[in-house]
Length: 463
Ligand SMILES: *Cc1c(COP(=O)(O)O)cnc(C)c1O
Image 1: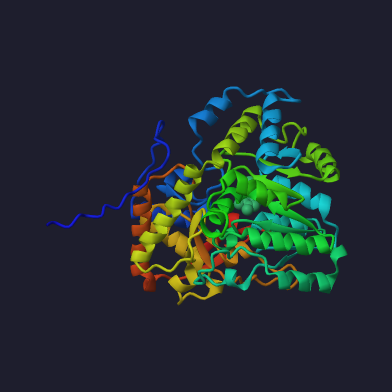
Image 2: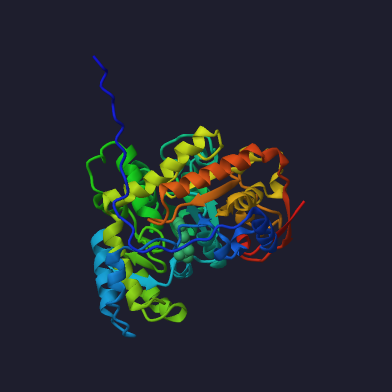
């Protein structure tokens, strides 16, 4: 009797394509020139010259027909737009915070929150830094302190919750500087700079308890909160049967307030907001937003943008949506493993992070291995990625030397609902080709360095 074949059953995205945008293939020779012209910084490439754009998932998402339809009912009143009230309702409903202030994007929310909560000389502990978050904390006179668990700094460590806060590190800081000097602890999840790694609900609860004991506030960078909720559902005991919406709500319940870049989870092209349970912080934010963003009922956004955000919130908590999103990243990770390419384990929620130190061990960190690798991948195939290493880490304001982060990574970020599995295959095969030729690759020197967030505009030349 013939043996019955076990058929592996695939799953596919919970959407189909209605509108397409052509992309352009170029020659290697063309890309060599384009990369040189862009100072070996993928941020300075023209988007037209990019074949598959994995620079970021920020604002690069495909909106649904439901979101686009919402754009047509934008109420562009200067004050009190109906889209603002709908968005506020959804923020209350899904994040569980009573107060809400829109901003034009995430860093604008960070700007206001940092200004409101931080005094010069304060310390702000966080589970690894994020570029714009840390910068706004510093501009407000604060000092960021990394209290993430050590496992997060080891790209090969497969800990399921590498975004967790190390409670000992946090407690030691409180002992050292005193609770009065810590206006809030800031937690993000999944942690972008650690490779898109989530924190667990158990860890969050423990941080809440510790901060409560010392009278310290706890704020949430909830930009990617749904991805974090997905990992909690998949990996943490007791959450398998809970919905993404319920997990999100529980996460938010432990925080005093949060800020969001809507350009991520909410699947829009622009937007952000602050939400809090503190009436005092709300009033301060509502007042400051008028100075920097616009009236508190639009915060630098059009009515239609707020409608798309409100609808994006409803879609971001759908399980099939988030599963397809993270599933695409996992697929890329499985395929890269076939070629032995070193990348951060386990795969993150939004991106693959190539381990540039392991990929290009012959290039020292002061010759920018991750910057180099991102340039080489572009030249090979027109796939655009970005550096997350020594260039992104910036300089130590006290010594003037580079920060040398342990992680020297190239991030390939998947925009939501934009690329197909074939695009992923093309990308993976290009990286595998560069990996084969890696010994021939030489490092870079920096020839132009801007003062703030230098990775956006720095320029390099080949050594
Ligand atoms: C993108 C992002 C920000 C900044 O938001 P922008 O909308 O780019 O200004 C802050 N925190 C996290 C975790 C992010 O991913």
